[in-house]
Amino acid sequence: MEGIKYIDEINISNKRVLIRVDFNVPLDEGNAITDDTRIRSVLPTINYALDENARVILISHLGRPKGTHVAAMSLAPVAKRLGRLLEQDVQLVADCIGDEAKKAVNEMKPGTVVLLENLRFHPEETKNDPEFGAELASLADVYINDAFATAHRAHASNVAVTEHLDECAAGLLMKKELAYFTMAMEKPVRPFVAIIGGKKVSDKVGVLSSLCDRVDKLIIGGGMAMTFFKAMGEEIGKSFAEDTALEAAREVIQIAKEKGIKLYMPVDFVVADKFSAEAETKVVTSQEIPKDWMALDIGPATVTLFTEAIANAKTIIWNGPMGVFEIDAFSRGTFALVSSVANSYALTIIGGGDTDVAVHRASEFAKMSYISTGGGAFLEILENNDLPGIAALRQCKEKESA
Ligand code: AMP
Image (tube, rainbow, N blue to C red):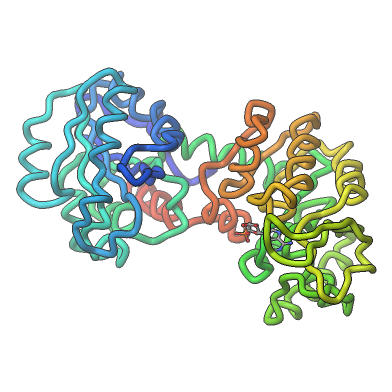
């Protein structure tokens, strides 16, 4: 992406480098990390900084402590795991600002790492408070943002902080995320197909409209397809639909028509008599949804249709499951499509969240070109082409060259 600098383009040697990472890892009841993907994904940036003999100061949030100190949301388990992955000590500092943080940073030697405690123990973080941003900035010479998954939020640790440091850049994870985004959205090899599923049209209406400017085919599945069917006056029984988004769905259909985008919708469904793993189920065409039943997955004919639609694609992006994939009985459509996308020859970009979970559960992650670490950030960058955390880096660069 143009207009920002990356960590490997600046001099960080021996400097105090403040790196905003996303260590918001899932923890079990005993506070053990159940998935350390988020920690592993920033190792290239941390190792790069260590190789440059920088003093690495890491900042992150974990969970939603809502501005107070919640022991269960301490980054202590992360410091331990990171230390093991780096094979060196990672000191956890009890506060991310104030005397304790200053003292710990002042005592750092080149080539060492400290992790400052959860940013969101301070209410100022999510308020993008300028003074809190200045306090964080005072700890370092250089600021690096490598937290793509939170770059859609304007918080002190990714926006305000950049106003108080002369040199800001993106990390290597951010570089990779933006490179794939650019490949798909700015110079896609065609045909370019987007698959959008999940539940709510209202969350993704902006994305759907923006995709209509770029893709050749748009595939709509999941619960959101039901809102589209309802908007077209079809009978959807007791299926989930968003009545407040019917007009938005009609607009997307109209935009796709005007732009000559081929819109693919399900032609059959797995319907159930209740929302339950024990429900009675059957496969019906999209015109035959019984009044008292609900559509909870796409059917086999739809899997064939969607698979054919992506068969000659050269670029595919996908966000959102095709059905209630958390329940086995309604997961086949999503998993069948995971397999179709994994086996395609296209550049395949998976947009975080549930789709990421489905791809991992199907053990097909190695066959995807890229799985984004951002769910909300992935959708927002598709919609707006920019994110507050990235815009802040751009402004920092402009300030520097002014
Ligand atoms: P989203 O956060 O909008 O991507 O929605 C993801 C959720 O959509 C998942 O938890 C799925 O269980 C749910 N979902 C997918 N298809 C359906 C459907 N047909 N009816 C109800 N929920 C669905």
